[in-house]
Amino acid sequence: MKRVLLLLALCAASSLALAAPPPPDPVYQNLSAELAQLGRDPVLGHYAQGEQARARDALAQLLAAAGDPTEHAYWAYIAARRVELAQTTAQIDDARAKLVQLQQERDRIRLQAKEQEVARVRQQLAQARLQNAAADEETQRLQAQGQSYAQQAQQAQQEATQAKQMAAMQSKAASLAKREAALAEQAIQAMQGRLDHLTPRQGPQGLQMTLEGDAFAPGQSGLRPQAASHLGTLVQFAQSHAHAPLLVIGYTDDTGSAAANLVLSRQRAQAVAQTLLAQGVRAARIHVEGKGEADPIASNATPEGRARNRRVVVILRGVGG
Image 1 (cartoon, one colour):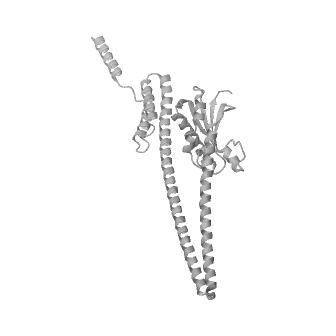
Image 2: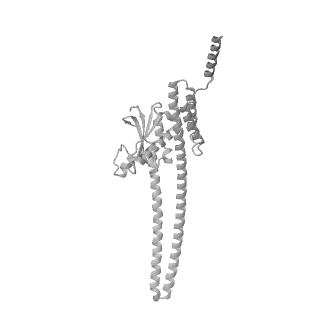
Image 3: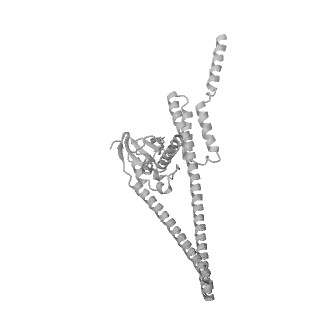
């Protein structure tokens, strides 16, 4: 009888042990909390929806691998990277949206300033014409009054000449502004031409292609819209070896602090990587680095040298020429 009671007690204990839920996974809980916080963020939550979905899939795989340490460690790493990528992508998308808004506001302000300047020049020209007409009338009147008013007539003529000179100077200023706009457009076209004819070369880590610094606005991390629309050659280069790892490295010149340059170089490399992602390059292939003002390829003592040092290098690692 005692043996039967003992067996019944053991069976009951085993059933309770089997029914007890497994202990919570702290890695899964932490990563799930980070992803949920991103989704609830009123600013960043609606960005990077694809990356958030992939992060949720990885978390599901992590939860399913709770009983296998090796599988659990693998999915813990993958889930952490995908949560981080979702956060980074959302921040980049938000920064790009803000940059677009700032650029639009800047263009609006510039256009308004130009319109005001044109109106001001027109008003000055109209005033100059009125002054010229008044001066001519005054000259005729003084001449008719006789020799005693000759000095006053001469003064009026001088004022008319000054008004004409002012009008000529304003016309010249408007012409110079138009010329500067044409030169800026030529620079953009030249940049687009260089982007369309990028060529790879062999580097120490593999085939590489260099994106020059004029693809970015001075001091900014986002690609110029004119540059972003001309990266087809770079995308083809990245897709030419679809399984090779891609290393995207950003550099700056030595202007400013080293810490700020390091951040700016990485942000520019991330902007190029984001463009590659948008064109179908797999995120798992891409590794982003920022090296700031390190490894210059030209002297920073000249504007030309600094322009060469401001660059982003895309490397197909392990691919030979």
